[in-house]
Amino acid sequence: MSITILGIESSCDDTSAAVIRDGYLLSNRIANQEVHRLYGGVVPELASRAHQQNIIPVVDTAMKEAGVIPSEIDAVAFTRGPGLMGSLLVGTSFAKGFALSRGIPLIEVNHLQGHVLALFLRRMT
Image (cartoon, rainbow, N blue to C red; front, side, top):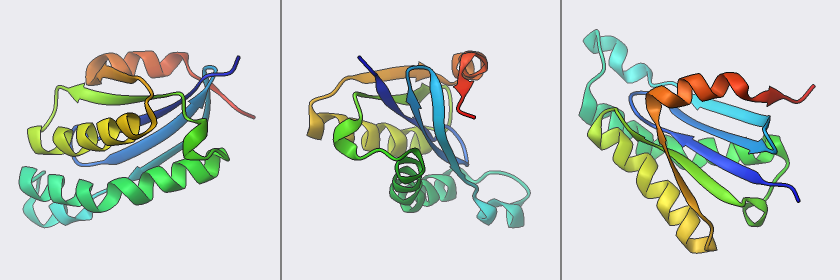
């Protein structure tokens, strides 16, 4: 039986979505936020607003690139922290809404542990 997971990352200023099937990375999309360049650093309120604009297009693109439709997603993993509160709230809210609307599990991921665990993903070639 195959397991397909949608991953959501929004801990700071990049909105990211990935689709993983049985440990293989099928797609990984990232939307960068150029709005912060003017200020010389990340402005938390601007970051959360940009996540609101980016989350749906990023997830849609990741799923299209992976060749999956929403009904094929078996679970949603999302960054629970640490990170910027407003940014995390956008990713968490999207992940919960997606999972609850389909009756699938949510998987909380620690941002720092996620960096380490990403090393174990296999890439489709």
